Image (cartoon, rainbow, N blue to C red):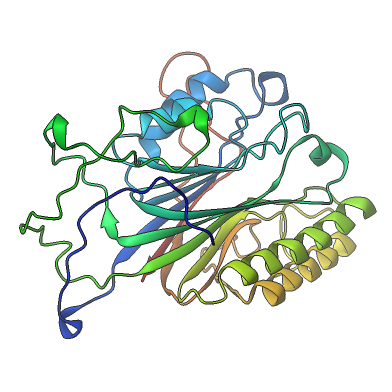
Length: 328
């Protein structure tokens, strides 16, 4: 990965190797179903307004299908997750929609890598699907509870496209501050490479062919950019999984093709399947792969409902939230 110009300067405490320990992270993956109004429920603004409240407790957030209202979510989480990366359209006029991918992090994003799928079919042809990868510094966590004098503000912590860059969200240089919080003082400085993707949907021959091509492309993209990384995680709506049983598959042939493509992704990326022990979720298409992290567990908190306004009582999304707990 190539370093970007904008970085967030935060405290990294040096401690003896013998006293270092792993940090537990909560990583949320959610297909938010924020398609343009007529393609979803004509209620994207109301749903997007309530989504941030369900994200804020997690360390790293991977959103899929945030085609609309992404700025609302990003701005709502500036004070807790100021590091942001997206996958925009390759050019302003095509495809019609961007990737719908968003990564938000409490930890400093050091580098960003992007890839756009070269092969997309049917409805996916109109969206700029691909993958966005970030390298986060786990020794540099944003602490909004520690205000700083205005004159000490330095660099912006947002790593993102210009439309989200904002001077209001700055951090401060406190390298000379010897004080430290208990939660930070014994953690070993370490980076984590994390990728977010949304892959080809559908069960036609052309869609299967596109998914196989995307599996190869994304796997090689991860392998090339993270071959030296000690900890790597991929999350997203993969539209495939490791076993034949899934409510998303049309028939046995469809299932076999998707499992075959999933194996290709594993082989090309060098990542391992994150096994899901939740009953009925083993074949879920919203899932994670990883390398070099200790898996604590995979949770499905359920889909929250709209609390007020238009659509009250209806679900915020048509997909489950998935939470991966790891130690790094």
